[in-house]
Length: 193
Image (tube, rainbow, N blue to C red; front, side, top):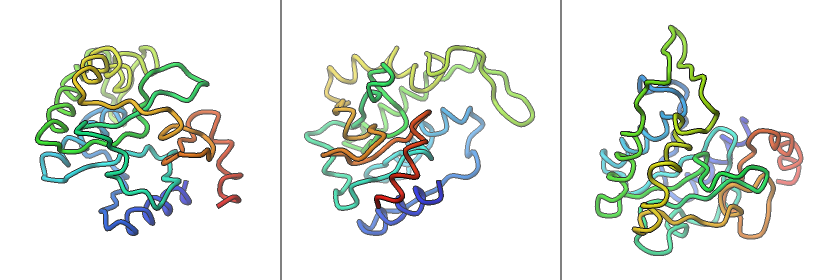
């Protein structure tokens, strides 16, 4: 994972972006919901855009600027799972931009979906006994409550999974996501690079 962190930092440096690696929860929320709150906070703080990468994700195409992921005036670009899974939206890698307040609005509506009723706060963590990536998690909540409308309104562009969710380098991949069993691909990727 240190390699991924270093490479993501190189990407940011190459394009003059600020690179943030979050090591401590900034909000009293489950770790899965932290990304939504952080993306929203960046929009509130005046950032033009944010690229979220889970710790098992890396920018593969260091030359492609963040703006190149957006094709029109959409506020967010994301992709579905790689074919190993079936979710039409994977929250492990996504880009969001202010886009005249649309990014702020979308991340706000997403964050509002966290109700906490299915989560238990222990002294050291948040726990949920519900379905992994289901509607109590940030990814499932987005799919259940925002995906259709955000796509139909043009707020969200769902890209091909190969752009943001491929677990191996393929043509056109911007980011690679070594989720779940695909962490096993990481040593070969490090050797390739």
